[in-house]
Structure formats: C-alpha cells, structure tokens
Image (cartoon, rainbow, N blue to C red):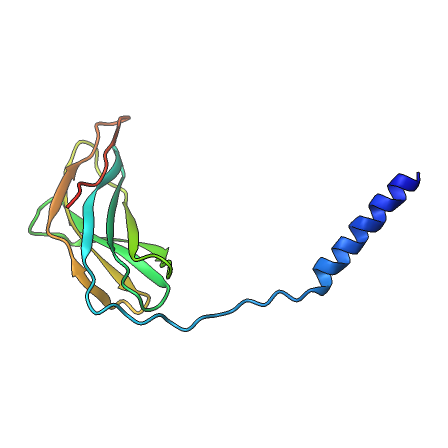
Length: 152
C-alpha cells in the first residue's frame, strides 16, 4: 500500500510540474528569400497508380515564409498544361535543400501526362524556378508503378 501511495505522489508531483511550467512557442519572422532557387534533382515520378501520380523534386531552399506549395501544371497534351495540382509543405530552415511533392489526381488509367513543376510561397508568388516539361504514363487499371526521380 505504501508503494502505491509513493507512486501516486510521484505521478501527482510530475503532473503539477508539467501543468505549471508554461510552454512558450517562439514564432520566428520569415527567413530571407533566396536570391536564386535551383532544381537540384528531378522532377520525376515517385509513384503512379491508375488514377494518381506523385511527382517529387529537390530544390535549393527558397527561403521566405515557412509555408510553401509544390505546384504542378499538367495535362495530356504537352502544349496544354491547363490542370493544376498544389500541395502544402513547410520549409526546414536548417536545411539547404527542400524536397517537394505534389499529388496529381484524378487521372485516367494507361494515359500519358505531361507536366512541369514550380514552387510558390503562400502569397502565390513563384520562387523563381520552373522545370522543363516532363511526362509519365499512368498504370493500367488496378496496377501500380514506382520510380525514383532522375538525378540531374
């Protein structure tokens, strides 16, 4: 019984320490924007199913606000990339590079899609980098393909 009381006392003391200690979140100002952003690897197909694909690329860290977007313009005609996919990411200030991923969905099975990628801040302003037009073919119904982005 004494052992149980001791355990309860320790748990209560630890809980009161945790509850009484204020947790302070530090909000940092935006980082300085990079003078020039460069795509270092990719873009390339990370994975593809019959109805979706994920495109991945690595760029130098664009800086600015921590919230950014990976953006892909795509379509089935290389001269008409009128569809847009956008995924939110958070920059890691401690890294010189940023990995971007964007999910394209819904797609048609067994179809070739053309795309180019860029990245933007939350204000919609481009980070000043855009890839050339690339392509991939979605899998047949019920199939999946996996790939790794090409190195550049």
